[in-house]
Image 1 (cartoon, rainbow, N blue to C red):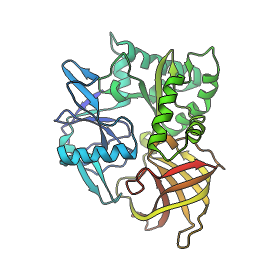
Image 2: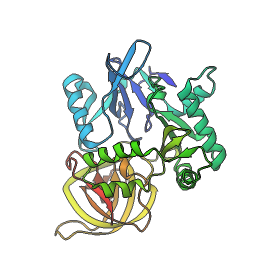
Image 3: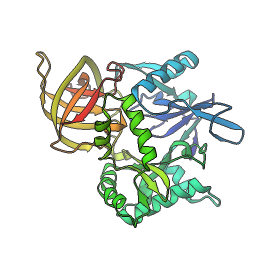
Length: 356
């Protein structure tokens, strides 16, 4: 559902969408945003030959997939064509895309959209599928239908019923983990309407991920064996994306400042996965090992902006890490700690998180 934006400030949440006066669609990243803008990436742009659309307006994807290489290309495009959507974040210490509040023409919210679909008199095939999937998951797994939202092209009404997927949001970490624990057994049961995605889809997915990440085909397949949130419902591909509920958003933009200390490699043990389903995906770690002198050993967490690593690791897993080392300054209490970022411009396409 869309919200006409006339106020000076809003609360933006992960996987919501924004339409700008230029008819650009941005997807919101995470839940921490400056008061005057929403950190987001350009998802769809107007194109007469685009495969997505509504009425006479057609669109194409600005990014075929969310990866650091595509994101950097995306930012370069914006700097050239729409520079007012790029800014340097002092808190994150990076250049990133964002939509100023003054440029938010429409604000689309996944849970509001799901409620709108349920009240539609004549939903199309894909809109019906979104409703049926949430009904099935709610009844079978025992979660409220109210936790679900719909994002992606269905949210902004430019979906193509011939090929678009159903991308759903799940509000609340507890609900996300309940689905994560329940879906694998449903996928394995041939009597259920849900299943793994077809082999031809997986083959292309594996090929793309090998190109976009420093992972071998076997490593990509190993990660995919832990995939729980991507499947089919009666032949329609769907995905699930866990987002923080309002009560789970406890940090504000600027509460923490992040300072780069360069690129680091090492090994560590996963100790906490409670925030691993959210974007960004956060894993608490201990026993970080690195042979180089001068590298701090008190690294507390690994933070991935790449969805390929989200929800894939468990407590006590030993992982190999390659990413940007940061010192985190807590502005609210003055404390400092270290973390490793997977998916940074500094590391390019060379960073990773691998199971040992």
